[in-house]
Image (cartoon, rainbow, N blue to C red):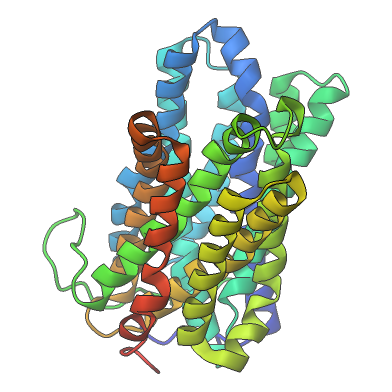
Length: 388
């Protein structure tokens, strides 16, 4: 990567990077409490709502490869700031769209901004971490998780206290814009994602170790999506929890993932990337096995916690390795890992549903557990190259 104009190892730069991750997580989570309002406002059925929700992920997957190219050519700073401000501008539109087509279009745009910002802020974070000479990526991703809790919590609080959805989104959008305004002057100006050696603006096919990193990211994101979309159903259909308690599993998973990320930098500095991947994969595998075999709710919830702890530092390590490997420009490698990772979280839950319909949810979760074993088995190959 080209040397930035300002020293990359500064407290202000690290703080600005954390703030960018927080804004991204905050903006994404603001949408979740708006979903019931959107369904009621538009009068759509569950099938149509499902298609609308898919638009968010579609926009992200389309934008991520483009964002990688833009980071190579123009740097990550303008993309982080522009997408952050764009998210604040578009967020109120999610509460104002008056037709399914209009909401679908806004969701595609919102998803595209989220996806592009995800790539750009990770490119920026890799440079900041490399300059610091110690692991920081898990903490950055932990700030994304905290932003998610804050966004969903604040939006829910405002709506439950009688705010109309447009007013609540404007308030949250103003907070996001303030965050980007504070981060902007402290972000590195000269950070680029390497030299682009591939023609055209499209998706750069991952090669070498990047392909392995991308596949491992897809597996990790698939596990996250499974806990979100299918975890509550497993608890209720297996008779471990009543319907009102179905969300307890994902709460435990989310809290464990957040806490694991804030402790992940110290852990990775102590045991290294390879052992972090090995331990994370084995812990997530053990968590799923416990979840599937638990006779009581408390043990099942412990399984969710183990999956969250195991998965918490996998993606930060994969991004760090993508930024350090020598086979592709770092920005394009990070874009490829992010895109395939998001494909896992988008398509994976649907695949689990297909397997569950044919063979049962227990079999689907069992196959996911076996997939997670790819993390410890591939950890050595994933971390062989790119040490800087």
